[in-house]
Length: 357
Image (cartoon, rainbow, N blue to C red):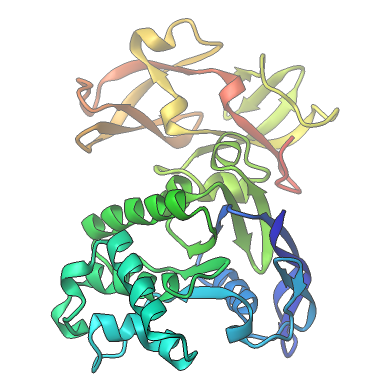
């Protein structure tokens, strides 16, 4: 069953097109993440779904009901904002119950819903505190709880963790994932953080300039990006790109020739100018590289130890590349090592269109 349907949605501010003919079908219970750089249109799309912005064209359906021109309060959604949006003069309990009281809900049901939300989010001891006495993580839990008590069909999250420090973000990310697992509600989540997107999402919609570049599972987006933009946006450290020519089952670049044996082409066109992308973690070194289809000898320029991983920089075919190694790898600047990769793990993109080939 479809939970949220975005159909031919366009939004223009004067001559500027912010959202361009978007189509998304979100099944019931799915966790969809809208991911992209600042200004790509992801928060604008979320605000259209919430009813905070009116589209120029197209339709929005929630649970088989056309809500394109419906007020936000009538859409059956709960929204969690980046800024928490808590009433400072009210206690946590007052913030959680405020919307329910305005809806003239019976006191017994209000008490039951607040207690249930507090238990799920583990904020029972905080119910009589005011927001000023809470940490950032606790405030965000209360903001989520305020949406939770409404017992809605769809939850909308607008970068809810961006104001928190790294540890709190990681902790609350797990809490949100657990919440979705327990509730099985539809959740639409906006972020510019690819770690949040990859760890939380059932599917990710990567956006650029108001257009969805790829809508797919995290695994498919990571391993088979549809275009060069998606390949470069997903992955940390960033994917390595080589510019060259596909010819006779090989890729020629900077005086090097890489075999493309095992690469799964998208179409019949297997010649011409192209980009080859290979992720740092897919480049092997030492004994692990010896029997791979593509091998080369390189000199290590810079080593960045990161605890569990070590990131080594080298130059191949005139391009500065990143190689992700085990954190215990014994490698130093100036070392000469053999590296290699399997072309089936690479991605090829047409030079002109930047689409996958």
